[in-house]
Image 1: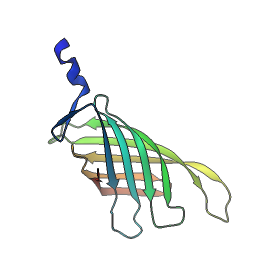
Image 2: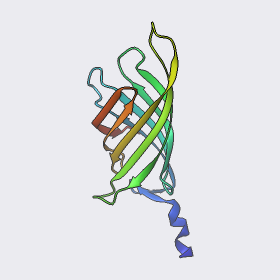
Image 3: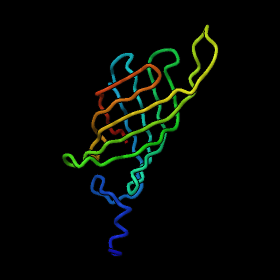
Image 4: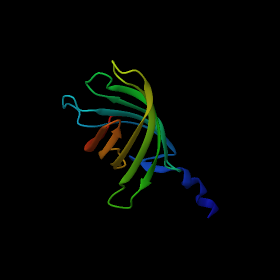
Length: 140
């Protein structure tokens, strides 16, 4: 048993042993006018499944651009060839548009189902926006 301790810190990803890796992905209907898009830049600790990084929401409306830290977890499903669930959450300061005055912490959550190459489907929620069943595509 002591011989396989080193393998606890590795994960097969695209044919390479990695313990910590970086992934950039985009979530949403890219190319659809007005659709909210989430760009993710994440660091994944393969051994623990912990995920942390930056999320950036962009939408072609006033006040539709937010950049903030996220954390989460990857869960292995056991279904099919290497499907995994990714759960993310974070908060950002949202300033209400004029003529209202004030700001508050807005909560962001995302749930994605991706393969080992980080391609799949998912959804996300923030403010009064709920997006489901949109593509997840690895971009780097």
